[in-house]
Image 1 (tube, one colour):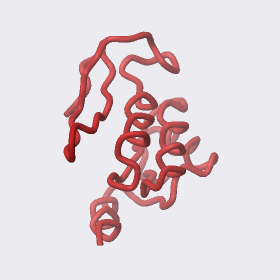
Image 2 (cartoon, one colour):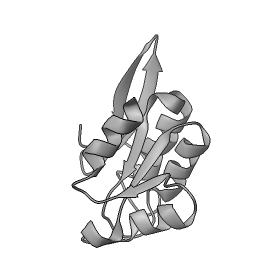
Image 3 (cartoon, one colour):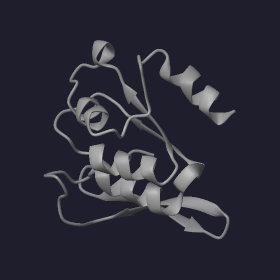
Image 4 (cartoon, helix red, strand yellow):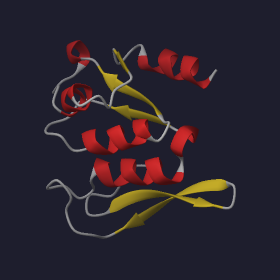
Length: 117
């Protein structure tokens, strides 16, 4: 699912399933949708039942949320500098310790599969 341009997304646990809610709210880190809003909800609701991936992008949105995910048991991946168009978001996430493993865009699918084992 891709967030609409004027709304946030969050993960919600309902029974033993997870769903995604779309909602309107204030900008976070200057963005709506904000990756931090989604990642913080995944950290809270999913914990180790998720894998967080941060890809190319400007600024720092998503870095703090990814760190919270990692602290809550989520495996995390950041796109490497070489394959990023803009090495902003993944760089900040890596620098604050939110990224467990860095990988090229082409190698991220294999890394996800290895983390699922």
